[in-house]
Image (cartoon, rainbow, N blue to C red; front, side, top):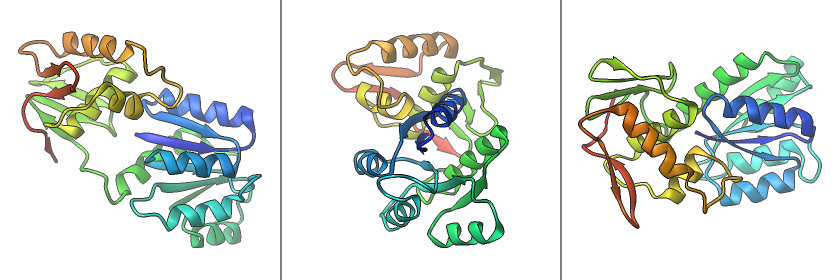
Length: 224
């Protein structure tokens, strides 16, 4: 899942970003509306966590801009303005959810997951292929009934491959979907993570590598 956090309070923005990354999300950060608009033009985000009172472009204006896009991201307004009237006005701008500060971080995580599931292009919850079953909400993976203990990045990488299957994902695709804008395009972190994931998935091997093309899960993915 790719998330954009738009928050002008830098300390809070970093806390949000790190907390969401710990949940396996690829998270970018913008500190004003202009920076956010530029990133939205470049990257297809699943969810935008949006502060309302932003410099550059106000959060209300940015929310309207997002709502008018085709295949748009879902918007969670996160703001100190928490009265019922504020909530109504925020939702009327096109926000999909509204959470007042201060907030409980586990609730924020649940709301982000819920919004991602509601996105029109979102796929059903459980992904299956080659004996693998992955539930991104419960964050569980099994293969042939055997529970797998995956790291955050291994889980996110497997989810990306299952969602794409049987198509290939290039190293660049995986860096974009699983890591974030700060990922080094020349790093070998994708290959290293794929290697660890292969070992944990066990035999027979199910991740195919084609040099110059990328990685894929052998066999079509199924959803439920």
